[in-house]
Length: 224
Ligand SMILES: *[C@@H]1O[C@H](CO)[C@@H](O)[C@H](O)[C@H]1NC(C)=O
Ligand SMILES: *[C@@H]1O[C@H](CO)[C@@H](O)[C@H](O)[C@H]1NC(C)=O
Ligand SMILES: *[C@@H]1O[C@H](CO)[C@@H](O)[C@H](O)[C@H]1NC(C)=O
Ligand SMILES: [Cu+2]
Image (cartoon, rainbow, N blue to C red; front, side):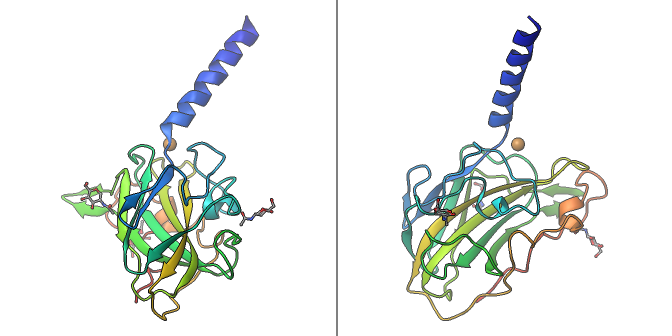
């Protein structure tokens, strides 16, 4: 009886953990919403976050495998979007990063000082309260000046809804080939892991207490 109770409890805890998070598993590009995990490296941890600031899983999530993921051609400056399995609901910032592959996106592990940021969505402060961009779909334009070639396109939502707890990184990487781009080597570039520190104010802040300003973790957004 005792072991049955333990198993039942363990199962329901697992189920509620899976349904309480979210995962960016769908890419839209070229005016088309692709199938789930098409052109996105499929993770092996359901919709759970990464919480270890030193883990390589911080790049493209747990189990992400480039070899088994196809790459899609996308024009520089065109509109793309990541859609999650449900609406994002843990408060925190969203950022989008890119890293140019030395050869192909499939073969690239994302190591080195290679990641530049193309988008930050922080909170809007108004009337003493903060509003985050909590969407199911995040739509943005790729840089117009970015060089042609293969890239990892990485979305990151950093959940900081639990002050004093460990913030959660919700991440996925798409594999894209940029066409019709420019000549700019976009910068600054950082390494992941490495770009996020346990002492970053944007990582440690208590969003429920005296919350009046916010700096999104990571490098400055690269501009053309
Ligand atoms: C490709 O597969 C090899 C062998 O399984 C693995 O070690 C490597 O990490 C994979 N590369 C990428 C970029 O996922
Ligand atoms: C988030 O959703 C709102 C409401 O639909 C929309 O106006 C906004 O453009 C979305 N933001 C992004 C980055 O997609
Ligand atoms: C808010 O601004 C102050 C003064 O510049 C800074 O020390 C603090 O780290 C900022 N807080 C956040 C959460 O970015
Ligand atoms: Cu969650």
